Length: 141
Length: 197
Image (cartoon, rainbow over all chains, first blue to last red; front, side, top):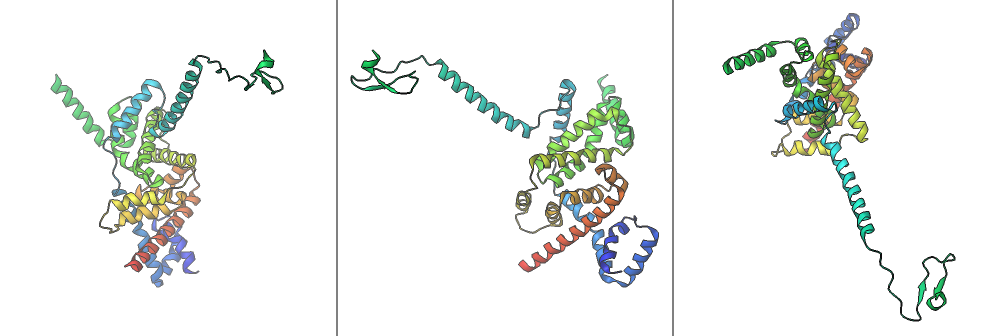
């Protein structure tokens, strides 16, 4: 067997999860293969690197309070508390709806202003002319 | 009277601190809020850490961990103890993280992960932790989560299979692949660092 095939067994061997017969074959290979021995040792060090990555992380000091608040909210309402990331898009949608409603209400609240009389002889666009044709003012009278 | 109440509270706190997870879960189910606080304090860092390494963003990680704890709190009276409490919690965190990633339909923004970590280290020296964090962020999420559950949380193969709802053989092969990928990326990062010097 080549090193590549043995390398695939190193992880299970490291965790004591390799069946005895295969573990014995791997151990025989490890005795004569410095590359696989080094690989096994390096693999054993991964846990330290990953724990070091977690040590870089800081949990917010108010995390517990936030969880307890969310639990209290659940107890009262039976619903999970809205997450801030859900609130933001909801607020944007609410703002857009408010703006549209405001604009419509403003438009409807404006008193109707009839069009200013055009100078004599000028053509007007008939408001309800079925053919969409322009009717001169004197003809409409 | 006040003194007696304080004394009782301290005694309860000590008893809970010495209790195992199974006892704490039972106390939670009986409605003792201090038992949940004890579980929260035991697993806060693990839950947030797991979510952080999966999502690459602390704000999202804390939101997910918060939601996971609330779900645990709500479901605890129905928890039968088939799995360890930690396995159950990690399963919820993992599922929430995967759901969160699917919902956003994007992978972790590697630069977003790298920038704040690099900024924390103005001297420019990359510590083991920083490098490991960057490598984890580069790995496929299926490999990353299995590596974190094994190497960071120390779960057994059986517990990982339970937490991720995977067959034992898949856990074995995926963990092997995850470790080999981590090793390859680690070596590449070290070599590229040496070349830059």
